[in-house]
Length: 325
Image (cartoon, rainbow, N blue to C red; front, side, top):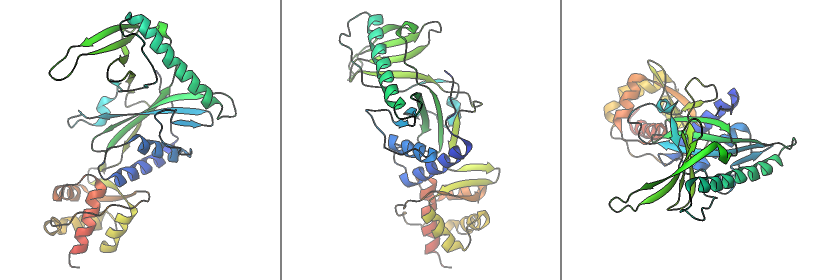
């Protein structure tokens, strides 16, 4: 399925800064659906009505977007872009389906499930169409892929198309019990012609459709890459995104906040800085970029345990404030 343009250049730049702000404010907590909804809506000038588990997430002037997030936890040091060109599975496209009899023949259950899913998409399309003047709905699925350190993110959109049951065939799959885990039964749904698995439908622990989706290659202009922590600009420059309050605290101590002054303060006071006390919680405000040298960055990372660049910068500001001028 082809990807679609999601951001203008200005919207992308705004989304990056707002996302950097969210990450700085989170102080290491898990990314939640509402975080990305906030970034998406505010970068595009769409009213933020909050994330919903019952209705489509974005319905504005004929645009309907269902936002889906997937954490990649097994990268083992690989960059997030290593998932480009692969197929991933999301744990739940929707729970708004039913299976009356899981003992029926697989293709009959498949027809029923995909009909329900298509009906749900069509109903949502009608509601979205009413929000625009043209009477038509531009329906999309937006995929946000992220990793545990909240450093790298990938985002793309593709058309949301109601599935035609005749385009697929299905088989039952039974996973036997193992240890304390009970056996489970799932419906595996494959695409006719390609034989690629496109859905897995669970029947235990809640019925839900688990879609398989294809991540575009890195060259796709509609694949948006965000790096909002420890961003290497060149061989000797790292950009950190920190909150304005933290930047002001550093500037108050250093007199001027630039690459040379910040790097020098870290390298000159490395031994004394190691005794810094824990940081306070940040306030709000959009994140600002600050630059340090690669050498200073390596020293900074080694000084304290920290959950984010903002956490390190806060600790650095307090440590510098405790040193004699």
